[in-house]
Length: 105
Image 1 (spheres, rainbow, N blue to C red):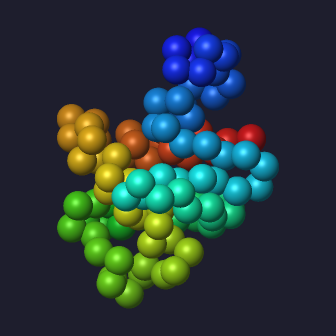
Image 2: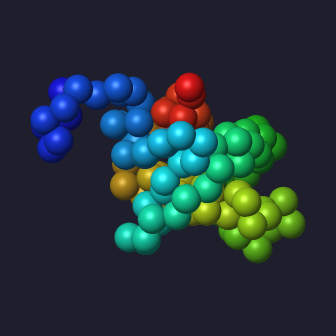
């Protein structure tokens, strides 16, 4: 049960990562501002970030000016970076897994 809303949690991963995914879009809170992006773009961004991690890059070193970062995956990258700052003890790959599960239909 979500104590803040007094309602049953539908997707526990969404509650853990503080993410809302109504319909075909995902709502990301970045720097206090809600950004709405298509679910498919969010999942593709998570996979692109994971691929860069497998190549040896650190999420904290990834910047929005990198050639692989496009307009569609800049917001998800910033969202993941903010989540890593909040809980530095959790690995980036675990965060990416939880985020992908949070938007699974």
